Length: 383
Image (spheres, rainbow, N blue to C red):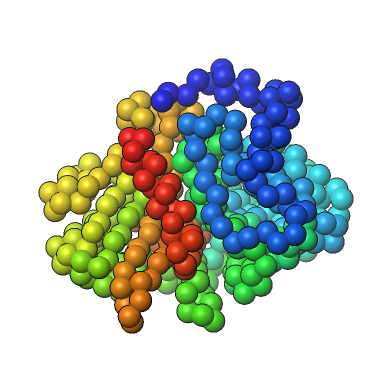
């Protein structure tokens, strides 16, 4: 379905925004409700007026009380609706700290004016010229932490969504919400404290695993300016999954290409040949040759974008719908039980990803797994 720019722009009028906000209240638990849950949220660009991720982020900022802190790491922010909520939060006493890519710094001029750029103050904006922790690269991570929103402390949002109008108009995106998880919140903020310094480190890579051994976050860049397959945490993830018919893997990745895309696709093909069920959902920048290799190995590939998204120029200007997900699910039998894993974050399967500020988050449990698989199936059926 090709999007209509005029129609989308009209949706930004006050009356339409209020109506959409009322609709969103029916699908999003309010930030001041007791007991926000840990769960996934998804943006469906076909569902006009839903704009789920947009309202999720706004609601969480609206619920942040005076004296609390919100920390944002985002490649791009250009949605005035969300920036309104961020500025309003700051005005009522919330400390709002923002890291964005310098290439998108002009888009947050109003935040820089409202918050300032002095990182010793309570609120600020830092436009990082590259990766915050190494030479080169970029800030591409997409995460927000709230010390409190409504009655719920220690809330972390992480996923594939930038805070942009393009994100809710035309992209399939996700954000996973951890609620009242101090361990996850602390892990992200420990890395944020390093990112805020903007200093090149000899060993920038960080990882964290929860006490239960399930929840895990990998924070790129890796510790090598010219990484090879052995340096890739995602390849390690794939290799560690059982290689047999009791393993099911679904990948939904916006951009898979380059030498890194090749070694990750090779790992998926190896799993398939060993008996695993493997499926792949690709975005517009994925290399056609890698798609053909997967199909030749018996891996179904869904090209999850409108036909008019054929080039970068046509899929980044709001004229068509496409996945922006960087997700994966895995179900496998180990230690006498079924295991369920979901993965989300900002990491495209490309060479650049390993030298950017990126995060991949492993999520345990069948509930999250079922949420992600249901959306993956919906996308496969759509395209």
